[in-house]
Amino acid sequence: MKDAIDFFISRFRSHLDPPHEPAAYFRPRPYRNAAVSFRKCSLADFDERRRTLVEEAGLNVFLFRADRIPGCDLLSDSGTGTMTMEQWAAMLLGDEAYGSNEGYFELKEQIARTFGPSWRQRPGLRTGEHEPLFIFHQGRAAENAFFSVLARELRRFGAPQAKPLSGGLVPELRTRIEHRMRPMRGPVAGDAPFYVIPSNSHFDTTEGNIADKLMVPLNLPCPEHLAGDESFPFRGNMDLAELESLLASERERVPVVYLTVTNNTGGGQPVSMENIRRVREITRAHDVPFFIDACRFAENAWFIRRREPGYADRSIESIVHEMFENADGFHISFKKDGLANIGGALCIREESAFTKRFPKFANELTDYQIMTEGHPTYGGLAGRDLRAIAEGLRTVTRREYLDLRIRQVERFGDRLRRLGIPTINPAGGHAIYIDVDRFFDGGSRDEDLRGVSLTALLLIAGHRFCELGLYAFGAFDGVREIPPEPRVNNVRAAVPRLAYEDRDLLAAAEAVKLIYDHRDRIPAVRVEYGRDLKLRHFKSRYSFVL
Image 1: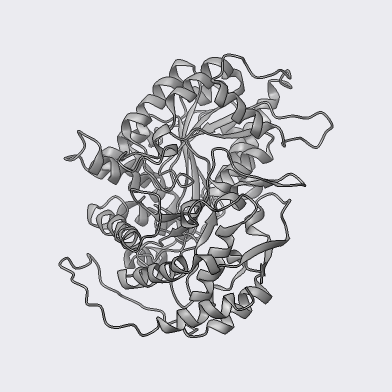
Image 2: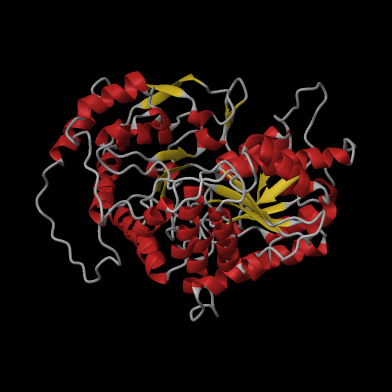
């Protein structure tokens, strides 16, 4: 194995100047380049990337310098896209007043236009009423604020009485909840989690924010997704039977139900309108609030229009409005479908199951916002950023934009599949997910961390992917690795918006193919630091076992 890395570098070098492969294109892009940025490094600098990766970054893709990546940086699509000229122009008009700047009012109005008139502030707010929009500097800050205040509000009801889970739960679901509860303990001896926050699938920081407040993040992906049914068009759906079982048996444990659109942890898969409506019906029947994680709401609406009967002739805007009519609230990172480089928000209906259950929540949230983000009318953002977000929300529901965006991701996925790479299908809207277990012909073991090995080799090739599998979502109990339940073991290639052309992504696909063809030579990695930490994939350091 000593020559494993040298072998892969020699193969990467041999691919720098392949025979010309002509491509046929019949539809031009609906935009043209207005600015370009040349790389500060060369694709041929393989040895330098190896040195940087091993000596400086400890094989951690999050710690690798972005200016040393000559190919596609597919680590994340969050805040990494290219903004439009209209957004840059809007930023020049930014009002930087400390309180009640112009951009705040523009963003409030655009929220109502994008998500529906029911999210518009009612004129003439009276004492005790609140506006629906709470601004934060990014989505995870909104998540943290929401679950921090929620945990505080739940304590107002007094400490919950410790008791075992109900025998009425579906047995497999009960086992999963107990599996999640077992390693969770609070700072005080005897503290144990009581509350459960279910979702189709929580993403890493959402899960971390929930667990940090001693609540159990519970994933309820639909059976079709778990079965790997590639013919099912909405693999991001929530398992309705498990949700019904949970609320019927353990309603007092569930302060809110979450639905992520699209389902990032579940392979970027969309959620159907039917599933959204059924989640609303079930939560309403049990008087439990329903929130949406709306980071990729427009992409989800595009899939509903394309795949769900009855929506083919509907506009994206009207589909978005229908989606969010079902929710008591939502949180969003504007770094995704806000098309901006920064920003997040939490929106809560004034009259809803949530505010009925937590009447003091809005005031407490405003206090939290002021103490951590600044005045509510800028929420940790510059006034120019609010302008850029408002313009981004106007652009993101345009059909020509979404057609371009999602079909580019689909072409990338199609190329990988034609090359024989096992991926989650059908392709999602923002990323392609490589199935690590199938990549290694089922030979991957929980302790192998081969997803980390794959991302390290891809960085040497010049492209940055992200391991979102056994290491990112699993845990170490001091003796062995505990895989996530349900099992997730993927490497994600998240495509930034409006940043790359097809040839860039196809080059990344060829790098994956080269590694796949020689996967028996991929060296293992060991964890040198951080195995027992929370959110460990952001902080750990590894080394090759050569």
